[in-house]
Amino acid sequence: MAESVKVLPPEIQKIITVREWDLRTREGIKRFTELRARSLPSVALDGELVYEAVIPPQEELIAAIRERYNKKHAKPGTSRGSGMAEKIVDVLMTDQ
Amino acid sequence: MYIYRTAGICPPEIHFQLTGNVLTGVRFVGGGCRGNARLISRLLEGRDVDEVLPLLKGISCRNDTSCPDQLARAIALAREGKLRASDEIRIYEAPAPHWKVAVISEVAGNLPAFQQVIATVRPKVEMLYSLGNLTGPGGANDAVVELARREKIIFAPGPFDRTLPCQKPENQDYLLQAPLFLSFQLGKKRVLGFTDGFIQELDGFSDFSLYSLELLMVCNLSDYLRNEEVYPALTAMTEQFAADAVFFAGTGAWKHVRLGKADFINVGPLENNGGAVQYALLAWEREELRVSFEAVGR
Image 1 (cartoon, chains in turn green, blue):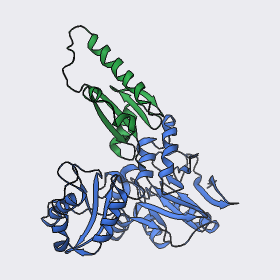
Image 2 (cartoon, each protein chain N blue to C red):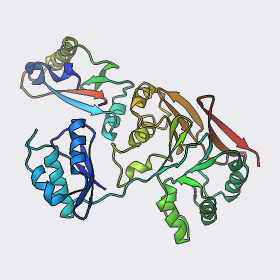
Image 3 (tube, each protein chain N blue to C red):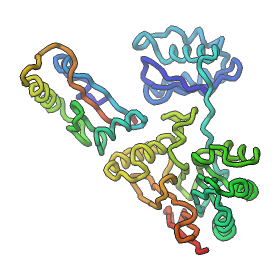
Image 4 (cartoon, rainbow over the protein chains, first blue to last red):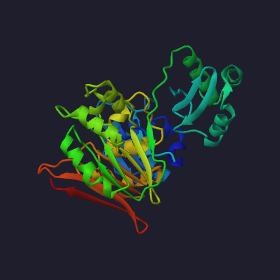
């Protein structure tokens, strides 16, 4: 997996679940088309394609995850900091 | 061949053969340490399973298991009859390279059109290949299959061909025994042909077998080249192809595109609406693959 995703700091790892998809497999292709991705590698956050044809630098990825996390938990009636992995990070790539 | 879906290790599948007690063709596929995996495969080739099982069992690498440990579990399941052997996906490999070939598809039991293409196109090329479906609903299926057998036409069946559409058992056998992938050398290009994505529904199909990548990229990723939005990904994936050119049928369209290091050729049906017989001509000329779609009036 891309290094910047693999070595995310523990406080980020705690709030996300990372799923890596290999485009050589039927499962990976299915997810790729569900996300309407076009290029490799790509990264989706919470089902939304955010980076295409690039794995972003770690700081940028962390900021994007935090932004989505904060936005989600700023909504009235939602709890904050339960410690559960809530964000799904889909990494679409291919193992050479 | 046995295909074992692993748990807890890097390679998602292990492939192997077991003939009596003799282990052959061990492959850890889809991920993991390639060098080590190949070494294990070589060391295990032709060995007696009773000798090797104690060596494989119980090794821990991650998640309380390892590649050798998973292989040991797979062998045990196979011996207990709990893991079923799959039929291998047959591949036709041409014995000699070609320079000019014709490809047809969707004969669909149309005997006059098939006779015409054999009489008029075949003499102009070194080989006439046919994709499925050779047979069709209400077609002269036995006569078409008998002609194909007599003329030694190399063909890869389509889904209808596998529904036992002939009356004579020998013709049914011919359809069932036909290779699902066609492979040949055309000049300097390695060319691959198959009918369509039904192959992935067959028992012995694995995402990680030879030519599976080409099939999945054509059928599943690009929807037979119709989804042009994914062409950037398709282009990138051609770097991992074993073939340089891929021809296929299944959509009724005629199309040729070159993406990355591969040519993709969608071969349409043998007879068009106007009654003309159509085929794809693939030739190696001036150090280049040339593809054209030709028609012969009837």
